[in-house]
Length: 231
Image 1 (cartoon, rainbow, N blue to C red):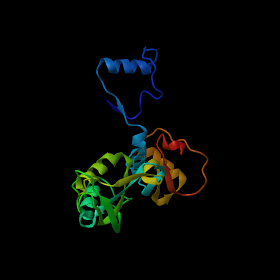
Image 2 (image 1 turned 30 degrees about the vertical axis):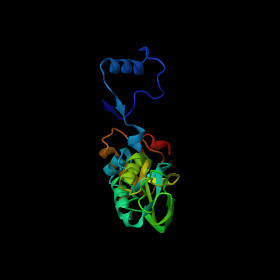
Image 3 (image 1 turned 180 degrees about the vertical axis):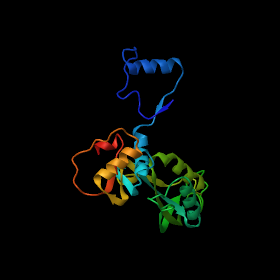
Image 4 (image 1 turned 90 degrees about the horizontal axis):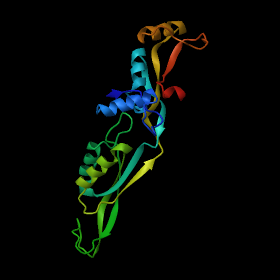
């Protein structure tokens, strides 16, 4: 069963059937029913609940009202110059390098890497036991945290070295594609009562509650689903 609002909000320490939450849990368990509730995560995606509201209202130039931070990572790695393009392609294919409406974003810087292979190694260049200097390119890409496993696996597969040097750093940057609510603009400003009438008609609701009107045309609007209403 797929639902938007979860049946359990605060966790269950016992299931005795003393309230409707526990009774639903008992019924689901007895009938081997898995319940998946996509609530806040569906609210926080760019094309989620707020986006559907904005679409109904015909808003343009929308952007996330309250972007979340801590969801982005940056990968640094060092690649032999002749293999940099192949590694970049692999990282992009794994989902790295997206910034807003731009894709395949990265930064490269040329330098020299040094290494000395120990016993039993088969270095990409040079000889075991001897320090070697190799013309390398430092590659930097950004990616969503949930793709870390996929991105690092693509790096290790595409990189020619036996031991791949790389760093993954947590970023505090806000991610403008994820967060609560949307803000956008009406194509043309509307009188307040006309706008409220449009909301009532397009959302097929019996009534619309509103705060005291300001006597101005509506232009820039904020759409906030349940979670976003507290922003």
